[in-house]
Length: 497
Image 1: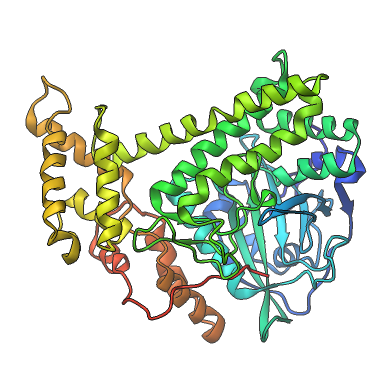
Image 2: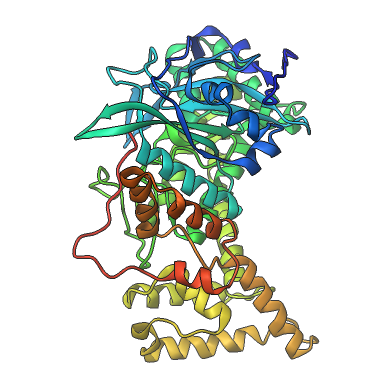
């Protein structure tokens, strides 16, 4: 990494290590100014953790940096090149509407990408305008910050700026720019781009950079590239298990939307599931259900297989041996993922120890939830706090039988433990594992519509306040836990173009 760092009044302390990679991976470019930038959301807590001065960011000069009307001191704007399988089809892509300003070095020495999303055309725009609408940028702000509060690795949102310029989709919309913060924007698709368009030396430079930035613990291994593959598999297995445990549906798990760091990235047609059903799809463009909730684990390993393919030349000079090595690592994914998921489900049901029948007990509950169209989050919330489950589920004799078996299982935590201590420990485990609120689709839409149509951000502020403490149990949280009335048409989300 270079040591080209600088500061200004806002606290920017940029390094530009990505710029040291071969030129094939990026294009340096000027920012694209906008007419009337207006700061509408600023994440002050995130700013402070980055070593930034929120007051300075909200100033005219600060907003200029967040809108592309100026470049913070030490920044070196560039757009990144990458490729990706989109719904199974390979394409050469790149940052068509985003600029990496640089890497902020925090007071603790941590490194984060600072990216402007919706900042205008780049060489990778493929005919697009490079801009973004206000609604999708607010959506990413809400969902990414909710994911962070839930303890799920994620990119984060520092700010949203209205541009004062329209963007044209089906209708005329208010333009906006999101400032996104990420451990990095290295994607599976970045490695696919290197394999498809670069040299072996380019690929090795990228892999070495990824190791140095995210996995320094494998740097001195006999085969660091095998270590890289192993670590990326581990992080994705854990990440997707966390998605499943809270009912999160990414919606567009293309390989260009899988971050090497193990963070959730690109909140386009994402949403949280209400009624439990593994076939749940929200994305308007996922007609075949490729990225349905229940398919996410297997799409994860499919994407990782594409990543492994890019590393074959580095894993071993003998291609057949390299393939064997990659396949052996990929074969471990399902056990890793399932282990994380099973441990998480045990915690959601209050099991501090393990019994062989636990998995069948978990699966039986999920079957009953699906059969009776029970709300995923609220069912676990009710079990946690001893509240009634939904009427259809509660009226089921099969559920009553399950509940008795579950209660008996809870009593078998530790043979020598006091029964009251067992109950308290189980409830504490469940309270820490079951959110009482998620960003309900109707609440997210309510907040976005108030902001976009009326310029009223108070609805979003209240929602963000509740979502910042998703495991709390209060009257306010109960109001936000309420499910919407059943709609005639399924809820649909759209890519935030």
